[in-house]
Structure formats: structure tokens, C-alpha cells
Amino acid sequence: MGETGDVPTSRVPSLAGVFGGGGLFGIGFAMGVLEGLKPRGIDLSEVPLLGTSAGSWAAAATALEVPFQVMADMRVPSFPNPKPGLLAGIAREIFGDQTDPLIHVVACSLPRLKRTILDGGKYPLSELVAASSAVPALLSPHVIDGNRYVDGGVRSGASVDYGPVAKNLVVIAPLAGAMWGPFARFVDNGMHKEVALWKERTGGKVLIFTPHNIAASIARNPVHLFDKARAIEAYNLGREEAKTFDLTFS
Image 1 (tube, rainbow, N blue to C red):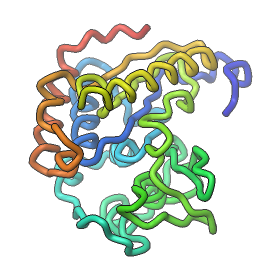
Image 2 (image 1 turned 180 degrees about the vertical axis):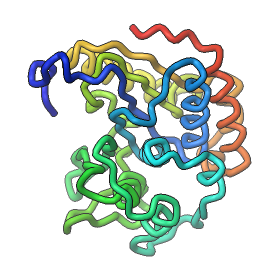
Image 3 (image 1 turned 90 degrees about the vertical axis):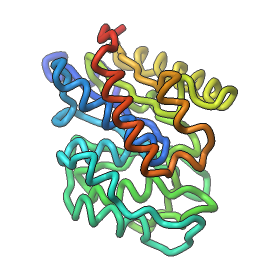
């Protein structure tokens, strides 16, 4: 994690993105927002991206230009499922063994649950999303280079404070905003603290997307996060939200 001063101003990207977790719902909402932003001049398909849990899938899909319909049709395993490599196998069906140096993900390394950034230029994106999404008690830890990782959302819903250095940062946090009362407020408060840390580190500005009431209403409990029909609805609502959202970075 370099400080802003480590990067010459001329080389600081004008735009980057951070995508948080939220199951299939989170993938749908994030990819809907991203699709809605394109006609308004904000395209994150070739900029540095940091994803956590579901956000890692959205980041990989965005970089590799995988359409949302492909993501919506992915195999969803039954839970709990201790089969090693399960998520990596599903991810490989979508992303193959492709890498991308612009993509990084957050996973928690065992045994201390330390937030760790994994580099998409060094490992296949299918391996990264598997590590970032291995929910404890539901899925086996994912192993990369002999190190075991579990879902990055265990420590932070989005890890905005670890976001790429950029002049402007788009944050999509599907589990913040209007979601689930006290839980959402906890996620929301943590995210805003991370935003403040990112701004202090980089001097950049931020644009934050969270589900508004209508989008949040389609996922009223954790089980709904893995429902394909609700994910498609979240995609459509995220896209519509982005079409009319105030795009002022601050």
C-alpha cells in the first residue's frame, strides 16, 4: 500500500473502483450500477479495481467484459459445502485462467484473519474470487501458494481504505445504505470511516453507491442474497439508480 507521494501526479489514474460484498444480489447491484454509468461517461472496465467477496466477481467480470447474464446463469452451490476448490471451479467456467494486473481482491488469510490484497496480475482471477468469497462455515478456505484464505468480508464489507490510488474513486457497497437496519448501519459506518482513511492516504475524491429503499427491499434477509431472480432485479434497479444519480465526486 503506497502513499500518494509514492506515485508521480502524472501517473495517478483519474478513476478507480472499489466493490463490496453481497452475494448474487451484490454482483447484480454492482454490475447494474456499472452498466448505468457507461452512458454517462464513467466506464470502469479498464481502470484499477479492488473487490471484496461478491465485489471480486463484479470486478473480474467488469475487467474481462463478461456480461451480467453470464453471471446470473452461474452455478450456485448448496450451502454448506466443504468441497475444496468448489468456487474456483465455478469461477473458472466464467473467467477461465485469465489474469489482469488492474484487478486486486481482498481476502482474509488464516489463521489470523489478516486482510490481504491478492494481485490479479500474478494469479488467475478465478483463484482470486474463490479466495475472496470463501465464507467461513459455508465453504472451505481457498488455498493459493500454500496460504489459506477466507472471505474478505469477514473483516470489512468493502475495504475502501485499501482502495487503489486515484483522483476519483467509485465505491459500490451493496450491503450498506438501506439494507437491514442495524446491520447496514454498522456496515455503512465502517465504510465511511474507510472512505475517510482512503481520502487521507490519496487526496482523492469519492462517489458512493448503496442500495436505495426499493433495491434494498428485494433482499430482506441473508438468504435472499443468493437468489438469482432477486439478483436480476437488483441489476435492473442498480442500473436505473446510476442513470439518475448525482455524479459529483467529493
